[in-house]
Image: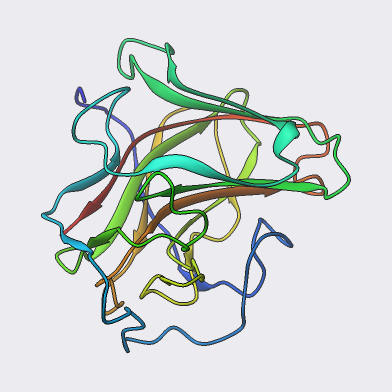
Length: 218
């Protein structure tokens, strides 16, 4: 991706007690631990940093698939080949229009593509990473979103339990790089590499957001 003249915003990481910006998605109230929950028969690949969740549309460096749709899935419009601007020529566009009964929606980027919320083994050992970074902006500014790492349960759970979250972010109309601190976390088996969640209370009139260059870094 081309160089950007924006700001790096470190986020205070919260232990997820409720999925979504305030109430949505799979959750628990346990404290993060460094004890691995990786099953003995796991086939997690050893990842090398930087390891991309999404670098560009169709890029061979993309390691996770946005296949885990949650909540009011019909309220989501998703395009991972959106043409936005010269600095970010191919980005992810997510539109959320809150019309469903659940009043929240989200997407897991996971590996393998047929993970089905941790029911199929795969993923990566990303112990090389100390953080996950991503670029984000809203269409108009003021849009709210929450981004997370890990937290999948299932037969092959993520070693990172519970999910580590950015907390609710209020996006601006300009590109900003955000960082989720993963120092000291157990990243030995990560199927759920990235999560976006939002809800109707935070975005009563809907929201359109853009994401780019999502990756694990040392």
